[in-house]
Length: 262
Image (cartoon, rainbow, N blue to C red; front, side, top):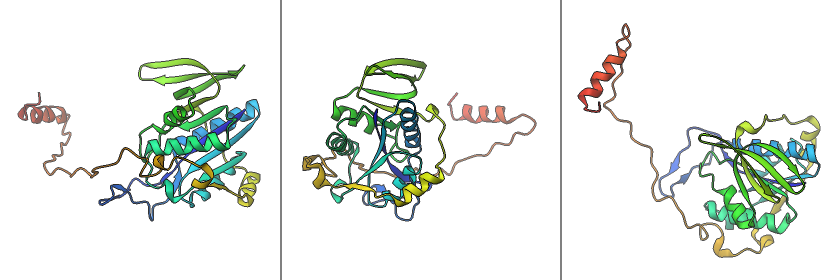
């Protein structure tokens, strides 16, 4: 079972600032972490490998400093990591990112049976890259997976979460899935894993290794962009209601009535 897990490094801060000129996140000086949803994707890959045998390869696209994150991931027991890094990839939107990751898997990991993603990245919240890679690779996609029911006879059966319940679906491998945090419980790195990660050589792939279509990379290959982003101003007409002997409900109702909301 050849499993690929795609992960992203994201800012570890609730106080992220925006560059007003480029409308992009200011990452300088902000600590970075593995995208939380991707942690569960890694765990699910490891769990399936432990159960079925095979190999787990983690792929991440980003600047050279992502190498430190990949060493932490190696310490969890994954078999290999790949860093896709090049200035040509800078500014990629979800479409260009999906193309680059898909091209990497197609070129260097062609025998992949299962590609796993976290549901979404917490810095963009688009949930588009997993389905985008599946589309590029022309393989089925299963999103919002909360349980892998079984993998046997070249097929996978999963349970996915819907707004009003669950759905059990089945597809032929290879497949791409996106997972929710409820799918598993994360493991801790071992001492042996940490020692292996410290000594490991991180494989880096650049644009020259992929021989891609340059029109589909980076800003040039990104048909979407942020035209404006801002923090909503705090309104000055706020009012604090004190619950004096259970009167808060009536006070709120009177205010809404005066505003002709009710």
